[in-house]
Image (cartoon, rainbow, N blue to C red):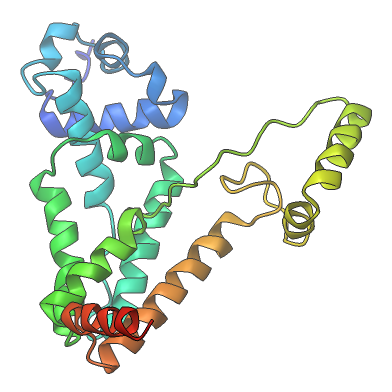
Length: 239
């Protein structure tokens, strides 16, 4: 009788990938050191040899997600390369819907996270952007560099009953006609983060392309913060 195959050796990489898989299946709220240990088939204390705490586990999970972002196509110009990198980050986030919440909760950047930021900064610098403009460009990108955006207001839940839903919409439309007109004009994407009338992917790419076009225009104009500040001062003096 043959002996059973040996269990794969536990290491940090195996722990992190098991945690990502567990969060993908059951949500980040279901993740605990105990539930992770049960999934792997070890006692919880065995995990602490590889991750010292739940927070370190979450840091490592972010590294797994960010480390999976594709590098841009070699030889691509800065605009195409940045777009490709950001959209790859978004594709990774869509595969792991919990990841944006965890990324926002981190209080420090790991080397993997810094590598991603360094890559984006390097793409702008290689494209001829000044350090000054690149600084402001990265602020403008914000969370888009990780593949998501933070909406200002959540979309309220709609009543389940059709009649109640129609009545609520009627009251809302009477008070906020322009909002309803705008919201009902777009294509529908069930579960959209920006409302039932929005296509999340389209909205993300639309805003990204607007930013990239704006960055390109400022770069061609030789924009500097000093020049912009001086322009504002001159406008105030004229008034």
